[in-house]
Length: 172
Image (cartoon, rainbow, N blue to C red; front, side):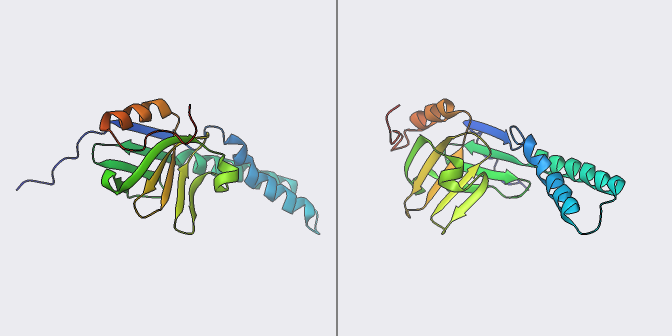
């Protein structure tokens, strides 16, 4: 008995680690613990607080090191997932895309930060770091932005596939 048909090879593959410029975030949990310890009414036990800070730093760094944004462009569509938060790929078929183009964005101003960002079900973003992304406008009017560190490689795939609307909103 034959198994499922293999998927065609992707034309573009990217894996972006979340930790790249986020090592400073690993200090966020220890800073919160330290601030809570210093702000408490009872004097902190420095060996216990120090141990807690070290454990929180290690745990925060480990969690951030696991987060990776995976993107694939195929002849059939776009696949994206934020591992390990999502075990299943999100898939958008090219016929569902009204417009696709590369753009520069401001992660904090436009989407409130990094990671999986969803707003009112109409505007969604997947970004790990940087400010370049593939903007998809779907036939339903929904918008999906996928961050990338390789915009020119994506531009070449879009041209190769002759995906309509590949021009950027603002000329290069």
